[in-house]
Image (cartoon, helix red, strand yellow):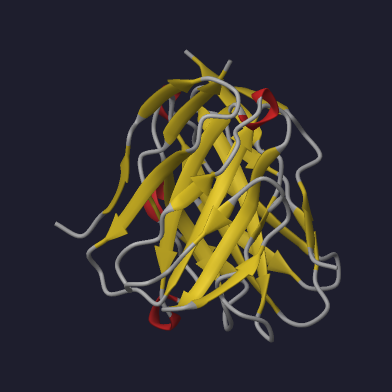
Length: 115
Length: 113
């Protein structure tokens, strides 16, 4: 069965410091991996995805994520955090062999960046 | 503007009173989905549709119905709502060309008393 784990409910970091939001996954085949962000009282916005190719994926707002097949991880990173990055972040996965409509989300990680 | 729209955005209702939340996308996407978001549980997929007249259950389909009679619309129907269906609901759409990237609507906050 497909699943996603975000082991940290909360991540707190000072502005200007690097940030990491962790994600591990389990799929029966090869994964498509996604990160979405949700700002307060808003819908989800797409940040970045891994489909194939380079393991380091760059996305919106200076975020990047590294696909690690051996560790089944897809951690979200940013070299220098901004207060405006404070939001709820979701990792999601689908199996390339199954329908692309079937997406599995983690429980979310609340990122707080303090000034 | 390419978008997914949902109506209503907010709804307070009572147990047992049938309701429909509409979802429409103007991007000609094949795939559409419904999710519910609950604190500590993340997003859970209720139903999804691969194309017109093709739907399938997600993780939490009990108590919900969907239909896909037109490509652009994917309404969510609660025949007899109960308080445990109080939640924030999101509709999303995608197509093969996006590699599964889903575009989300603004959400519908439903309260069932």
